Figure 1 (tube, rainbow, N blue to C red):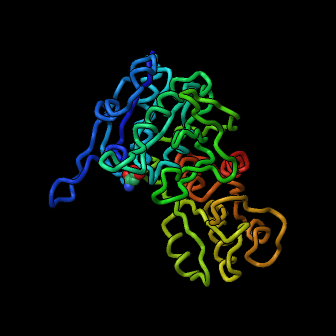
Figure 2 (spheres, helix red, strand yellow):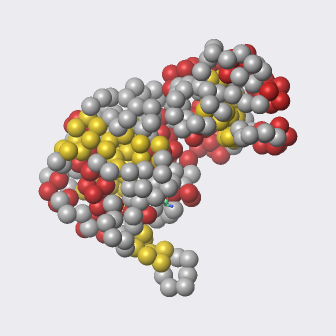
Figure 3 (spheres, protein in one colour):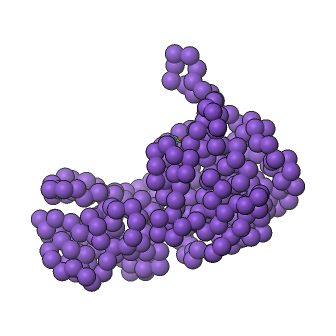
Length: 327
Ligand code: ASP
């Protein structure tokens, strides 16, 4: 019984640039583990799998679902938990995708770094150690996918990357961290509610287009119409509690007749409301026109959920039910 470590690249593994070129020297799992004082005192072996060494901007649903399959096999073979190192840029999305499909009680912990190993005070080793300790802890069982960073434990459902450079970039604005790593021990304070989604067929995922559009001041309806043209689903990140300019309301209502259109907030925290404002383009008006309320789900996570649902063949009722559960 040990912890299975999968590496996917990102800043945590960037050892510098080769001279005059764009290529980046990347460390593998053995290099990462060797740089962590205390990892040998984990009390269990690390079983290392080097999967990819890419910037996380290049990761796809297919990569992550293949990773889930490999991690599943490791758990079936006896691993007590999984750790994945990856770039932080898309980590809030990959963590949620994993959480939606992860079928095991063993924890799936994601981490990374904001300062690469060539800089003073790199955070990768501390994050990797905290992640491994969390993955090895029985306290983490049943919590699904977790993001462990800066000695905080965040639920995949709530975590956001909130700063472009800070080592404290990961936060859960609506919920706070669900635990902390204190003196090397994972202390879990609360358990997030989880709702799993059926695992989609990979071919269906490739054919399922879901766009996310952030509404901006004096929005141009034609741009929104063009974006929606080839889509099977659309996430709208509206103003505040879920508002758009009145001139967009008819268009969004028409789009909602042919595909799920989910209303979220672009603010980064808080919920879309349901029945507080009634003007054209308000949350109540847009729901009357058929938009689905995304609740507390942020736009990026809403897009992950909708694409997974549509690729899995969910009909409108199933999409509404899933957003009621997750929102
Ligand atoms: N650009 C990097 C990535 O996401 C940033 C990081 O790893 O923190 O791959």
